[in-house]
Amino acid sequence: MSPPLFSTLLPHSVWDLGSWAAWLCLLVVLVKSSKLYVRRRWLLKALSPFDGPKCHWLYGNAQEFLKDGNDLEIMVRYAEQYPYAYTLWLGNFFGSLTICHPDYAKAVLSRQDPKDDFAYHFITPWIGKGLLVLSGQKWFQHRRLITPGFHYDVLKPYVTLMSDCVNVMLNKWENLIPDKNPVELFHHVSLMTLDTIMKCAFSYRSNCQMDSESAYIKAVYQLSHLVDYRFFCLPYHNDLIFHLSPHGFRFRRALKIAHVHTDKVIKERKQSLQEDTELEKIQKKRHLDFLDILLCAKDENGQGLSDEDLRAEVDTFMFEGHDTTASGISWVLYCLAKYPEHQEKCREEIREVLGDRSTVQWEDLGKMPYTTMCIKETMRLYPPVPEVARQLKEPITFFDGRSLPKGAIVLLCIYAINRCSSIWDEPEVFDPLRFSPENSSTRHSHAFLPFSAGGRNCIGQNFAMNEMKVAVALTLQKFELHPDPEKELKPRSLLVLRSSNGIHLNLKRID
Image (tube, rainbow, N blue to C red; front, side, top):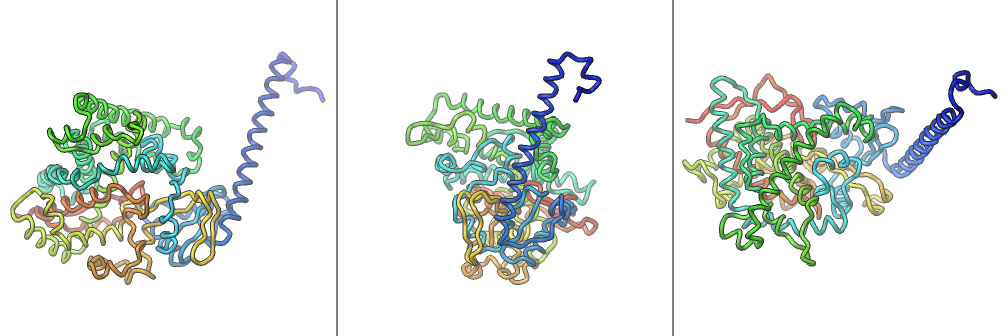
């Protein structure tokens, strides 16, 4: 067969090169298609013991999740329809088992399976390979080195700093409400928790509550949005497509701003620690913080964390230490506004503990049992992290005989587990007494998972609980909270649990 007409106008070497390129592209497509086909067959076999909702031939179940505030309720509905676990598909080539019962959750969380590469792949360029995404021996090493940073002796001085940051936020609200009521809380609370984590964990005064237009704050919000958008946008699962897109460009620009900020914080601390490299000497001058412990930590061979590991851990705790806690505080304030009888009980308890003081002390934290129960009941209904994922490094067989092979991806829907009707009586009812000592002692160990469970549970949960208690106590001391009847909240998982239309409350100053 003679070559096409236009090929006669080109040198044979050019035409041959074009032919090879075409064949190479075809070969790449065939290899990719073959891998996808094999992956699809493997997933169908791996998930065959489990039922799930009907799938679209192309989109899987992705079309059902419209990001309209009903996505998590859909997962709860499926949990009632398919007890213990069900399959979910994003397209034809990504399937996972969604766990929605404490018995199945216990089986998975009692192991040391790594986080799922797919779910956490999109956030890794931002937070690096820190404690959140590490696995294996390196995770054990980092966990051991970092754990002293959350000892109660380290956490004690943070309570005063937390109070200071909360009071800055409350003063802003006091100035806002004469002109603007209701107030959208989440943005203000997020700035406050970012201010708190930077002051407590890194002794860095950013003034971010008063300067919310700073480049770093904008970068953090943009990174959160783009990571979530990429997860639900199927073409952006491909790194090259995302990299070449306008969203990828904005992601890299925000990433550079965030990393420059982190490097600055670490560099300044390293310079200040040049003379003192032992924690005991530092503690004589000021309170220890998380960054001190990171920089001074040494393993059994005397090796500290590399610069890359340092930045990963700092970025991880910058993210985890403010976004998750902001979610928790915002939802607690919403629930207390929605249920005024519980709000008043908390306020009475707080008045007995604080009196006229506007600063919470370490000793006060253990004297707020009813407030603590309200916080826990809120986190049951609105867990800050609604879902976590694991990739099995070994096969697993559940109590009912069904099993999954090595490599399968498991999604633990904490939002659904915390509302499991076979474990919780009237799960949609807000009842803080569920968390009384008597009721807690008889409950399934994995029915309440706001901080996950097992060896990979949240290392900062005591820090988070302390900050939530401080924020709730000082807020109720100063304001009455009332819901905005015109704003129906729409919970949505955006890395952390948010409301897609904000959390709006009417605030009334208490004289």
